[in-house]
Image 1 (cartoon, protein in one colour):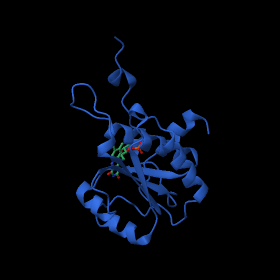
Image 2: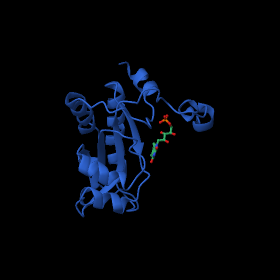
Image 3: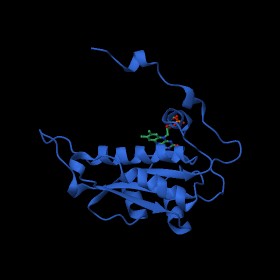
Image 4: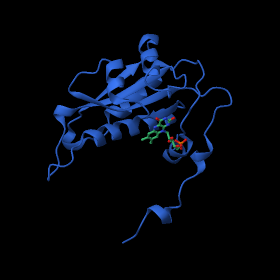
Length: 170
Ligand SMILES: Cc1cc2nc3c(=O)[nH]c(=O)nc-3n(C[C@H](O)[C@H](O)[C@H](O)COP(=O)(O)O)c2cc1C
């Protein structure tokens, strides 16, 4: 798909059908995450693929936002392997994991797979649900699957500020 079409077609899917996600499509999505740039090429991301009913049920107990997706990617990063920027106030962990997640969400759209970025959860409870190692922090969850019949973009998908409000030419 043309990149512009990928960006345009992606929307947050909030109701999934029971259709399974094909392994090849999942691999393509994970590969796009693997190719993401990270600060100093540290690659501190850790992506957990959740497909088992057991762990999906645990996730459902922590967030209402799986919406029936058959696959959830939990994007985390190794807090002990981040790059701290000069000044010491910020490090690369959150942004590197965000770039990985963004590559994957766009790759999903390119594969015709629906998705939704999820942050509505208590990170400590989510860490417990997936038995996250102490040195890792969860950035987000990515629901993956196929929209249920009649489920499409919500009205806010087509509501974006004009560039004049968010861009300044200096
Ligand atoms: C950082 C981030 C966090 C989000 N968290 C949630 C969430 O927890 N639950 C949810 O249903 N949607 C969540 N969304 C989806 C947004 O609500 C959605 O992207 C936004 O309303 C624009 O709609 P669109 O993605 O269809 O264009 C999140 C999106 C982003 C980028």
